[in-house]
Amino acid sequence: MYFQYPITALFSVFAFAFGLIIGSFLNCFIWRLYKEETLGGRSYCPQCRHLIEWFDNIPVLSFLFLRGRCRHCREKISFQYPLVEIVTACLFWLAFRNDYLSPQFSWLLIRDWLLIATLVIIFVYDLRWQLVPTRVIWVMGLLILGLNIFLGISWQVNVFFVAVGAVFYLIQYFLTKKKGIGEGDIWLGAFLGAAFPSGGLLLLIMVLSYGIGSIVSLILVYRSKKKWKSRIALGPFLATGAIITLIWGEKIITWYMGLFSGR
Image 1 (cartoon, rainbow, N blue to C red):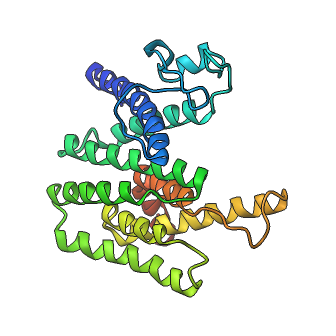
Image 2 (spheres, helix red, strand yellow):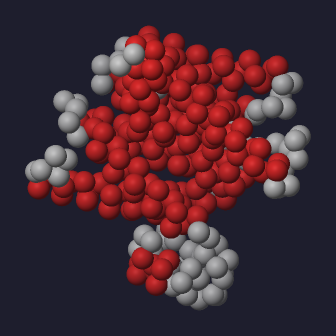
């Protein structure tokens, strides 16, 4: 049924290809954000700083053709690059598949693609450097908040859930004496409130992120990769929970409620 109409299949392919391109851009953006560099200018190898030609900058394919090494210095290219490109492409395709029947398809898809891109940045940035990119959260949070209002969600509801998300982590921040989570996580909570102005969806994000985080933490401790008191970045788990909720949240909640309704 999904591929019944050729135009839908064509746009589906475009969504995946566009996701590959955006994923490549996100890799560059994440690195330059960390290095506090401008986005202007061509991409370069982080090891030898040699400028990368366009044919060595094709998402996924260039990594395969170069066998994961820089053409000039032969240093290994991080698997982060093709993984981010492929994951972003898959998520863009899934978002398109979710939104294409909506009456507000265009604006809804733009919002969801912006949200996915932001969550990918948060995931990678916090995983690598245990820092939450607050500047990105501020800008994208305001933009997504504006799009939600444009899509018909009242600003009062949006602002309420921004406060709910922020306060939830602010309480944890003080209860753990500023050691359990960082200030960036408070801003991340506010961002999630802006992106998901729904009590059910926000709760699902928390359940998923803390559940996944607990499982991963136990595995790391079991394999002696971490100690019980080691600090583990929260951002990647929140981003993962938010992505799952964005794509499958309504279906998960419907399934869960169905357990109690006997259907």
